[in-house]
Length: 449
Ligand code: ADP
Image (cartoon, rainbow, N blue to C red; front, top):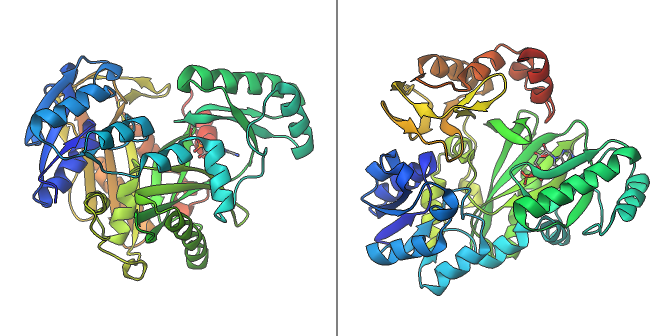
């Protein structure tokens, strides 16, 4: 059993891991940059180590500094949270080479899924349905144009190493292909050091449906249903819910089984998410994330499980604490991602919080690292809080969200809270009738600068 784990992250996700560890009787070590000396994760952990200056490349992404922090504190395992080093196969390899445990999948799983072309190829072979598209990488513009004509426009050109919504360009016609192809390639090169791209049919009205999977690394795996994350801005999720409003129990059981079987066959260990676009009753795989997702709490709410606890358990070599038959959906959960941004342009607004009050009451969970007087540093992601509500059905979850947003106080900075108040006025949000383009269109007409 682990006695001490190091959390290689910051913000709300670092707190999330520290809390799970404490409930399991495990000590936690926070690492932090000089800009985060007063951060909540540093205050809440049992120990902390400063690992470098503000820039994340010199601190939260510094592999030698993190390994050294383990050695200094005697931490036996590392939880990476999401982002930063959570999907860095090289890091996992180095962790293992130092006789430490990485709380997550193997370097090999991360490598396979981190490259979108290899991931798609692997999933196809494991029987998972994929978006129609090129057979692997597309070497040049001429080939891209040939494929565009063959598949029919619109198509989307994607960097195989892309992530976070970057490295993706839509070509609506043959004329747009040159720019889409060259831009996706350039973004892949500059953001991820890899200019390989592939092409997919661009689906025009899909929903984003993702399946939570969990494996024990010994050939056993389960699924924990789906999350609908269709409300997106610039391909980034802002509002997530579980179960998906348009997914039937039969569809859930069928796609869930395909996903659980696929990860069982590769002896996957820990939490993973298989992302799909869903259109006209069909699922199309787009990518797999080999880590805990930002939106994991909605799944935790409806299944009554602690996914971080499970991650730690399987990393210790213990079995999962539930089987597929134990997993039953209870009610409906919604998460909104609150960021320190000024509307309507979503301009980053770090600064000092003069007053903070988190909502509470039945069915409300607030995952946030804010506190009164905290100064949000300008160096990191703008996510400051995740508000998660759970109700007996979708309608009660929505009214609970409205109530909880009304209780929340974040003074001193601008946040995206007004966006969620406005969204809750929309009939489409209440009927659940939206696809991945709905929010962008709504923002264009409702939040003009
Ligand atoms: P990233 O790794 O950058 O998150 P994904 O491949 O997961 O990229 O895609 C992110 C989002 O981009 C999806 O949720 C969807 O909104 C959009 N997208 C991706 N592929 C397609 C496609 N083939 N057709 C339409 N939209 C797509």
